[in-house]
Amino acid sequence: MNPSPGHASRRSSISIIIPVHNGGESFRCCLDSLRQSSRQPDEVIVVADGDTDGSWEAAKEFGAKVFRYDSAGGPARARNRGAAMAQGDILFFVDADVTVAQDTVLSVEAAFQKDVNLAALIGSYDDQPGATNFLSQYKNLFHHYTHQISSEKASTFWGACGAIRAEAFRAVGGFDERYVKPCVEDIELGYRLRRSGYTIRLCKHIQVKHLKRWEPVSLLRAEIFYRALPWTELILSQGQPMNDLNLDRTNRLSVVLSFAMLGCLIGGLIEPFLWIVAVAIMVGLLVINQRVYSFFWHKRGPLFALRVIPWHWFYFLYGGAAFAYGLATYRFRQFSTFAD
Image (cartoon, rainbow, N blue to C red; front, top):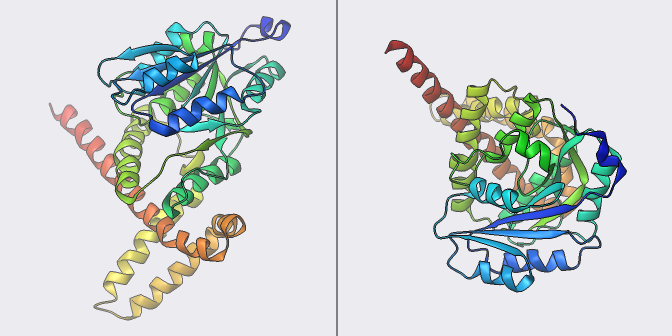
């Protein structure tokens, strides 16, 4: 399916939709960045998802349309509520912990005007994350890198910086509200859009700044329980190919090598020769991921790149373990259902 040709004949109106739950100072920065946009949105809709910090009041003062839930129900529900209130031709979803660049909204408008067959687009984080600690810089830059090297023909949506024609959004039924945590509700929407014949494009030049501060516990909780496990379930249940964004062949090979390296390091306590094998595997990991490490070297220098390496390998280990666990539990449920 394609949007109707009439989109090219008139200026599209843009509704920005922001779900927020205790957004704090980052949310206020998000709103301030919209004030400085060279192309002002036609409306800003904020859905306060059970906030207790007065985020909804900040949105009111800004001049946004505000809907407030008494208790949190997740960003999927909040975004759907905002979309139901929106009057724009284009629904531009933005997270409460990002800031837009001056030309972000203008670039979104231009992309849809240029291609009348484009149903949805996603952008990218920029290369200047807001939080200055190492883990936040590493994770947000890694996200930027992943999007910048990926194919522009996308198969997923992204709620942090993603725009979609209102008619396409409503045609596929919006976000799945069974996701009550911020996890893969945007990816799942993208899969449905593609199955329905809609076109999604990754526009690498459309960028927002991520302000979130990551710490080890918050990062691992989000990546394992809110991303890896539900994404594994989604891939297996819908038969999706593992070839998009951070699921490419290099990453899958790196997961295998990382576990082989770990096994050799442990086995070396019994057979020291395995430590030599482990070193050889480490060299292999460095070689096949040299593009990633060169990126960090270029952006933040050699010391930063060296600090990235162990975290990157740890990422392969916990990501691979989460996928293996998700696969095992999915197959077990299938077997149990068949047995019954």
